[in-house]
Amino acid sequence: MKPVLAAFFLISFLVAFSFFEVTVAGSGFCDSKCGVRCSKAGFQDRCLKYCGICCEKCNCVPSGTYGNKNECPCYKNLKNSKGKSKCP
Image (cartoon, rainbow, N blue to C red; front, side, top):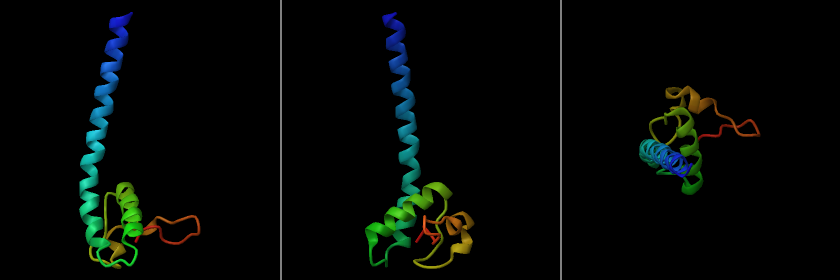
């Protein structure tokens, strides 16, 4: 019973670790794109937070610091609870 339990924990750890690596690998793309997108924002921390959320969902960030949302329809169509654009 103990070897089975040990094997289960080992496999669980390896699966969790591989998921963490995939998550971290995907965020580098969003960090760099959102850094450019939010470079001129008045509230950079808020801009980076919401841009990161939108980028993770859409795998896309429009070019430039403002506008160009037609380049990424998913990014453009995400709305907050008040019906306004969620993404900067």
